[in-house]
Length: 81
Image (cartoon, rainbow, N blue to C red):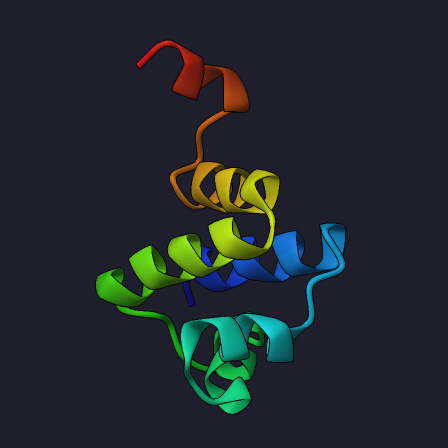
């Protein structure tokens, strides 16, 4: 299964963000976030965008790290865009 779940799990752990907090911010069930984190299912592209937006509301650094991990780019790649 996919990069999004792995990236999300790492970011939630690193920034101590609960699955419930992300779910509430996104307006979805916690079980959906749990499925992504455990890689039982992969979020659709639209959901990846919503994850990023929700993480930005919680912690902007977490959102940036999530997208960098998901896109497999280093933080310095973003500076060159």
